[in-house]
Image 1 (cartoon, rainbow, N blue to C red):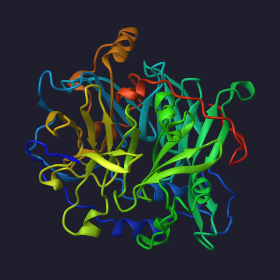
Image 2 (cartoon, rainbow, N blue to C red):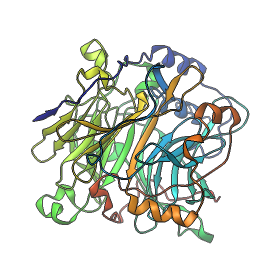
Image 3 (cartoon, helix red, strand yellow):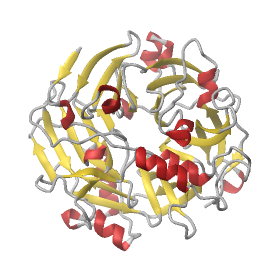
Image 4 (cartoon, rainbow, N blue to C red):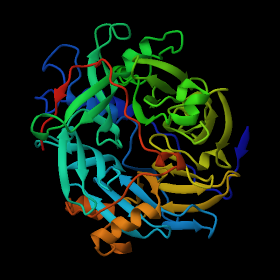
Length: 488
């Protein structure tokens, strides 16, 4: 195994203490009517309300970095010419709903903003539209939100909005459909006798509904697929964090379709239509066969802690962000994170990146990692408000620190994806709008004005393997009833 050591060091970030947040969550869950788009029967005993689901899913997720670094520089602080992979980075900021597109020099060339939403993740369709997983404020009660999927044109025009139980991640498919992670309250007596749990699923949305409306074409319960293979997966249940925390026992945060082709000839794990899903609370990455509706491969417990963003590389290896979010509780001391490359067939870690000292790179939650053309790796240390690119040897050759801070100087938490100039530049020329440049308003200013101004952005190709077209998952029995989504 190769262990990469980076050059230099960064300020330490302490592990997050969630006890107070958990107590507040459990004691303050509202009892009022459920907002539009909530799933499940209203008032059913043991069911989680939509407000409770929203609060539960946000546990451990901050909108701004836990520590300030007033002496540290912002913008691009490391840039080694000829050593980094060229392109543009799309940065998604949760609060307020915003996405910035920056070039290699850190200049903001395009900005999108929402009005009443928190943006969890923005990605791009093959056409260059922006697809956003968001939580929209409804009513006058503080914290009352519903989950929505937004689609914006490259020039910022809002094309449509759909209310549905989407969370964390959505991706446009090459055939025009959209795949999303879903979250629903349900009874699972095998795990929780009298309490509802939060099950996650993978849904395929089709635009072929009546009168052009989008419909849920398929939706597959991850719990149902996992529970079919007790010989392969032993689900963890939790005794920490109180009753609400225990119910969010999966917490899926990312998925990627298997590539098929030559890799599938090597091993059926990679067959087109199989999907790789990252499960934070299970400390697991798992592959599912949607045709048979069962898990076929899993790895992680005892090796990683609270992971994010597992992706398949061109050689079949899997790259993931190992948050090690409970490191301080398990090992003591300060928390630290790493990025891991795994050979799923041998189940061996073949490469990892961690800082020196390890505590200089730590994101308790969120985090992204993507393999770039040429072999470098782009890493978002979300809770530090920084994005950096490392070589296979672990040298940092490019680093950006967001200038967006709250009123107390905490940097905004972000997620990042890199897109090639060959995709971005034609879209920018089509729009023919001036760059917002470094004078774009800061997040703290935007949060005061709640501006709804929108700009533009491009498509996804963060790692070299992502340039492949996405396969169409096989048709199969639905894990849930089909249902028509609300029209925009």
